[in-house]
Amino acid sequence: MNKFLTKAVVIFIVSFLSSLTLVSCKSKAAVVDVTKNESRSSANKIIENYYNNKNEFSTLYIKANAQYATEKQTQNVTAEIKIKKDEQILISIRFLGITMAKASITPTSVSYYEKVNGSYYEGDFSALSQLLGTDLDFNKVQNMLLGRAIDDLKNGNYKESLTDQVYRLDDASDNNTKKSFYFDADKFLVNKQEITQTNEGRMIQVAYSNKKEFNEMTLPLAVNIDTYQKKGKAEINLDYNTVTFNEELSFPYSVPNDYKRIIIK
Image (cartoon, rainbow, N blue to C red; front, top):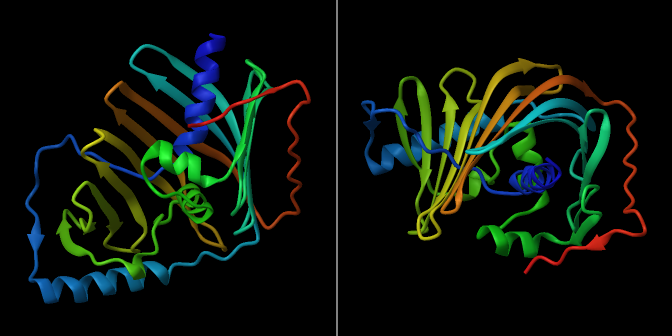
C-alpha cells in the first residue's frame, strides 16, 4: 500500500501540472463545420463570451475527496487546495487524516514532498515541462483547478465546430500536439479540455461537471482526469465538497530536514 500511495501522490501532483487532454470513446456525432472565415469569426465570438464570465477573487479554499486508480489498484485520499490568485497554490494530500504530501506552486517554483519515502522535489517548471513534453506555467495549473482554459485563447488560431450544443475549438498548429477546448453553448463555460501528443502516445483527459455559480465565479465541483501513456493509464476523480472564497489563508510549507531530494531528469 505504501509504494502505491507514494506513486498516487506524485502522479496526482504531476497531473495537476500537466496539459489537459480528452479522448472521446463515443461514436462520432454529426459535426457542423463552417467556412474558414466564418469559423474564425465564430471562434472569436466564443472566446469573447468565455472571457466575459466572472473570475474575480483573491483567495480560494477547496477541500476535495480524491480517488486515484490504475488498472491494478485504487486509492482514496483527501486533497486540500489553497489558492492565492496569481501568486501561490498549496496542495495537501491526506490519508486517514494524516498529511502524506504537500506541494507548493508559485509562478517561479514547483516544490513537493511525500512522507512515505521521505523524499522531496524543488525546482521550476522547466524540468516538469521536459518530463511531460509540454510547456507548463503557474497560470496553466491555476486555470486547470478553476475549470478554465489553460491557454490564453486570444493568442490562438482555432477552428470552430458545434456538436450537440457544445462548441469545440481546435488548434492543430503543431502536427504532433493537438489542442481542443469544449464550451457549453449557453454560458460558454469550459466542459472539457484536450491535448494529445501523438508521437509520445500520451493523452490526458479532463472533464468538468456539477458547476456551481458563486458571486466570484462559476466553479466546477467535479473534475475527472484520465491519463493515457504507453506504460498504462490512470484516473483521478476530484469532488470539491467544501469551497470558500476570499478568506484569509495561510500557506505553510517546509520540507522536513531528513528528507532526500528527488532530481527529475
